[in-house]
Image 1: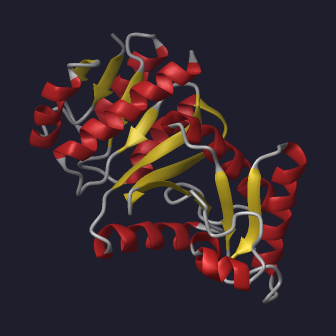
Image 2 (image 1 turned 135 degrees about the vertical axis):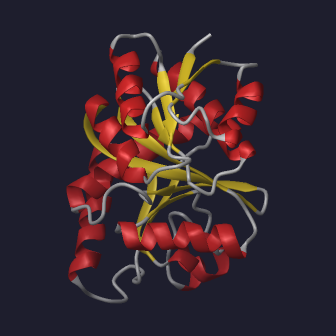
Length: 252
C-alpha cells in the first residue's frame, strides 16, 4: 500500500483517524522533535521515495504546508475545497494559496481544478465568479476574469462561462434572466477571482449551511501534500487521506 506521512503524529485526531486510514494506506506518524523538524523529515521521506504523500496542518498554519509543497511543485501551486451541499458536489478554487492571481494564473488554476474534478467523477461545469455578469459592471478585476475565461476557452473545450455573479452560476432562473446560457445555473466548479473572496465564501457556506468543506487539496505537485484545518475533525482527516490516495492513483 502507498504510504502517507502525518508530521503531527502526536495529535489525538490524527492518531484516531490513522486507525481507519490503515485500512487503505500505510501510515507514518512522526512524533519526535519540533513540528519544523518533522516537516523536514517528511520532506526527506518524500524525496527519498520512502513515502508517497504528506498530510499536515492540524496544529500549524497553512503557510507551513505550502512551504513544504514548494519543494515538489510542477509550476503554479493552487488548491481547491470539496463542498457537499444539497446532494451535489462542488469544487471551490483557489481558496488557500494564491492571494491575487493574474489572468494567466487564474486560467491555470481553472485548468488544474477541472483536472482535479476527475478525482470525483465530476464533469466540469465552470463558473468564473465576479460581482458582474456578462459586462453588467466594469473594472480591472472584471477584465482579469474575462481574460482568464478566454484563455481557458482557447486551450480546451471545457464547459466554462464568465464573468458570472454567483446567483447566475447556481440558480437556473437567474441565469436565464441574466443571459448566462452556457452554464445555465448549473455550475459545479466555482473559480474565485482572489483569495479573499474564495476563503470567505467557503467558510460562510461551511458554517451557515452546516456542511463540510474538505481541504484545501493542493494541486500541481509531483507528490501529494495536503493541508488540514486546525479545526479539522477525525472524519475530515480520513476524507483527505482518501482523496490523497486518489491523487496518487491519478498520477500513475
